[in-house]
Length: 543
Ligand code: G16
Image 1 (cartoon, rainbow, N blue to C red):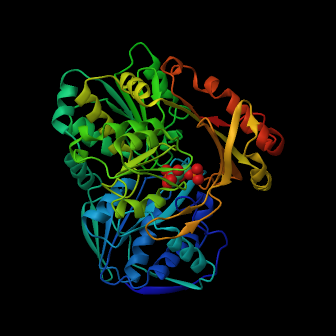
Image 2: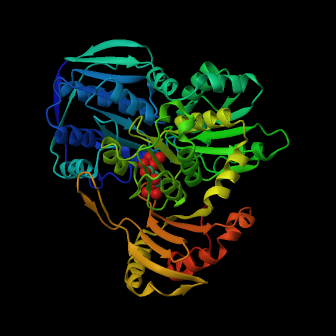
Image 3: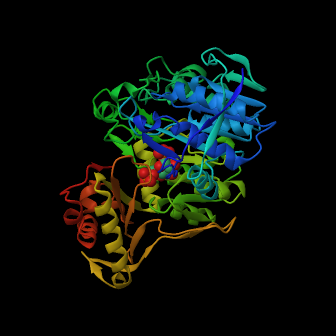
């Protein structure tokens, strides 16, 4: 074994987005591409000697090859220990859990989350810090700047490590341990939820379908839901992670998880349905012929948190991303706790969780989580719902209906215009910014604008400020229209339009969502000239 130094040159465009660096697989397979980025991470971190690094991914195409490269590079940088998930598999929440439990200095996650996999799909990489969460902006920007001036990288020429076999291999001075992908995470879940009550629920004939979408959560759900909680075999479907996710799009929303939605709408629907995404940090909750919006899910978990043993002592606060509906704000108000509004990106919750200012966090993009780790957590959210169903004995639809009766309903929808021309998307946002000052006081399809701005955020813990985080038009009746460009796409630009309407009247709580939001949807289109500026008559995806 010997450590080699390889000459390289900067490759443009290695700036991490909302959640790490995501590109097409073919981009990542270019010579030096992955190595440059990993070297930039190690250079930014400084001395790695004596430290522990966690490495794992969602099992998508290129995961195994990338892990071997990272192991050789970590060994060349003097890490004392690297912990790798068996088969290269670790869900994003499991990486966060292992970093925290084993006091690692950080971790590298290989995933492009919900983006499609396979040789023609996407790949991604991100660095998580010692607290277990995604590196904050300051760190990701430093990594990017380093990638712009990189001239060499170092790696060992050691042979490949057998990552399918549990155990220890020595690579240079580094102890590489292949660990069980599920064990630490499953143990953490057992401590948070009432497993006895959930076991009784299943023993009593309660039925469920969890769709792993051939992505990373399958093994976690199988071990915990079928194994530890005794749900019958077949409860967890599509549970083997595949390099191309079996051709499915592992984005758990009613559009991409159509198979589950159809099942839940049929005569033989199980009592409860759930799905998770590529890397296991997102979740979708479905009742019989009824899907729960992520914003409502956050609010409902918050309102009922004390039913779960891990949250019995109550919540310190709630945090949600700006475009997420304000349903959680109403719960926070009733509980007398703060509700923080952050930019999109789980990384913005980290400081609030570390400082004990928030216990639960959530995003409209099917992400929910808590201070148990520093990532959003798909299986955790499903177990929380199971705990809630077991404790109340009520079906999903009733729990949600009763929540609306108590707090009012925040009708909510997101319209995505995917893969549009980047210049056109930037122009649309720039034009909107120009219009902002004149919007206050205007009446848009019956909704009076209270204020309109481009969201900026100052972190109350570390004082860091970010600007340009999305345009919001807030109405006096509590409705909102929000526009922002996605930071996770890999093709052109994706415009996201988020529409929210607050309805306090219970007699109006059961209208079709798009119908209830129609006046705001039309206003959103005309204010931004979406059809004209993007050339698209309608959104590509409505959730
Ligand atoms: C990531 C971030 C989330 C964000 C989501 C969508 O999730 O961690 O905080 O809400 O992307 O971001 P965008 O609207 O910019 O596409 P994931 O599950 O993709 O890692």
